[in-house]
Image 1: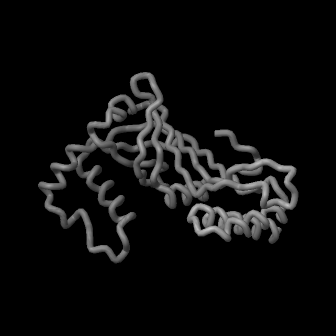
Image 2: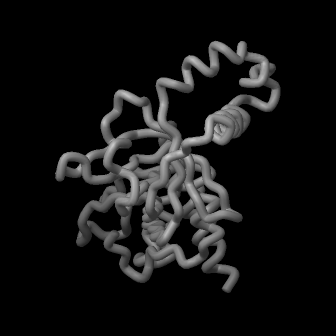
Image 3: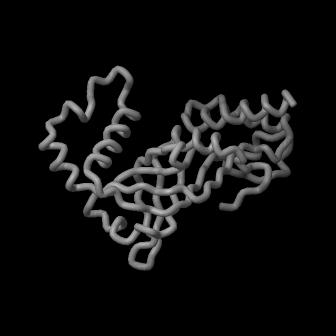
Length: 207
């Protein structure tokens, strides 16, 4: 990923936090000698340095993804930035966003109990704390039947790259103008980008 120095995430733990907050990824590999991608949630294990997930069995990507170098792309909030928001019109439009790219090698999960454990952890992460739903209470025969329709995997992480493009290459004054405009919209992405930009500006001003 192209990352100018202004936008580079250097802290591994920050990238881990980002992955856990934006767990729905795009997983790339080569299938039949062509790039192939699947959109799916992934679970991070910080201690092991791994990502885990599962394919639908009819999805052919799993058949030749093992032992390849895999790329998982995690996308955060993003939005258009208009130069009309600046103090001068001698500028061009851009796009602010956050993203983390994770590289690694994939191994298939062969043990049924390990796969069930992965599914249980994923459900626990995304269910509301007040939810009464758990996989443990679903009929085991039903779960076993459904499990035959998926293929679990684990990715050993070999490298991570993080990019946080939030107008850091502009003056603090210009960043504040952008924040003001973004905060005037009701769209979720713009609101989230504005909050991230405010955090960055506050960090710079404290230095």
